[in-house]
Length: 330
Ligand code: UDP
Image (cartoon, rainbow, N blue to C red):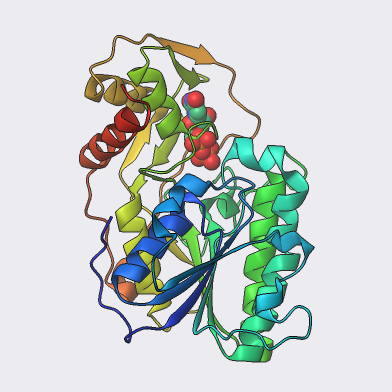
């Protein structure tokens, strides 16, 4: 994937946590293509070696396999050695699907709280700019629609999404505190549902679940009646939004997502058609606290970042289907 965006300056040193994940690996590819140096960290708790295997011999890429919940690695100064300095830190490490964060509840809490604070300290010490990946889940099951950044959210603090939602809300609070009190140069993105090649097949997220089911002519599992909505952003657009935010001077959270809203039942039908599949659609149980509606208001991103998504859902789905058709050998 090549994302066209003007590079802030030639060859900066970037650190990406969660570099083996879906977004981390696409961001890495884009930064390397722009001539930057990238160091990636991951322990593959939900990421995949496959996502970064093509980078092994890249001259500007280094990879550290490390569990950040055990502390920062030596290369970042953990054991008193001389740490590497990075111009930009991207904190993307976290389980990010409902299946993933329920499976790794404590890790999800730690990586978005203790680890985030260690990275904020690192950014302060090294005068790095730091970007943290927050989420539309901060809005919970929203009572405002579409969701603007000014909406405070409607989150169940002890529910089956709370380990993710509350950890991300904490991370936003921590990031703002380091910015206000310590002058750290921070950016906060609220990511809305993003899809594309390299999403893990078994992490339960809807686009890949429907695509793999349709390609295998298995039943498409629509949870509940399927009237709940999501607004799907193609990964290339999302990464372009990340870069625009990182290059901006804006410190408060910014929604990056595609406001093209769709019900899950319509999405199932669309994917079935695009896959030329004979799959049936069946209805399964709706998970607890599943947000009923989700759609970003992206006025802020349009105004401040001059960013807008450009890949249509149909085009993005076609590209994604092609990727999984090849991956599954179908
Ligand atoms: N969903 C579904 N079938 C599936 C997986 C998910 O109908 O096999 C629904 C789920 O109930 C939710 C939406 O798709 O309403 C998006 O789920 P996902 O896990 O992708 O992410 P979320 O937006 O809930 O974090």
